Every structure is written in structure tokens, then in C-alpha cells.
Image (tube, rainbow, N blue to C red; front, side, top):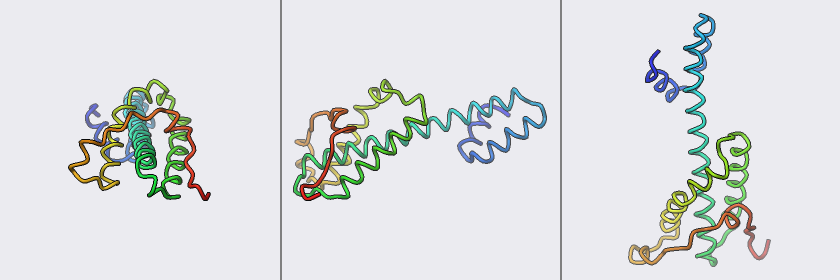
Length: 152
């Protein structure tokens, strides 16, 4: 199998990839099985990193909304922040390549995505979007600060 064929197989189905690797092992074609495993591993790590980025941007967006629309705060915002933080923690525990350096590398791009999503969710008129330039969130605000409604 060529490298491209492995990549295509992995992107289509993890199950089919594992089955194909198993077939290679049964035929004692260990070098090909190792190539398949490497492609599978790389793809799974990319998927986990994409998922981590998505959760990070989601938390950032909700923190921005929390800061800039206090009158619209809801328990669902707080719950979303807590749940996304839990998911990010699980991913970080499972994926050693998601280090603090990695978080630092993706921080600003996730923040920019969060700003765009927050503007959309806050229904800011186009005339106001140019003026919405929040300061970069800190990791304390995103990972540790507590967000509760006053009556909770």
C-alpha cells in the first residue's frame, strides 16, 4: 500500500484501517503494518488536537460573551464553560502532544476564532464589529476562573 492509500484509508475509516493492519500482521508484513499504524496514530492525534482547539475556542467565546454581555448571562453559558474545560482536560490527559507549549502556540488563533464567533452570537451589528476588539484572554480566565450566576 502506498502512503497516500494509507492516508485515504485512515481518513475514511479507523475500523477498516485496523482491519487492514491486522491482515498485514497475519501475512507477516510487519513493515507495512507499522506504516499503517503510523498513519493511524498521526490521524488520531490530529483529530484530538482539532477537538481540543474547538473546545478551547468554545470556552473563549463563552468567556467573551460573559464579559461583554453580563445582562444575558445564563446557566447554560456557565455549564458550557465547565463541560468544555472537562473535555479539554480529558484530551490533555490522553494526548501527550498537547503540551503547554502547544496551547501557547494555538492560543491567539483560537482567540481570533472565538472573537468572530462571539460577535456572531452576540448579534453585533456590522457597524459595531470593527469596534469589538477585546483584549486577549488570559489562561487564568479560560482555564480557572469560575463563572456563576449571582443566584447560583
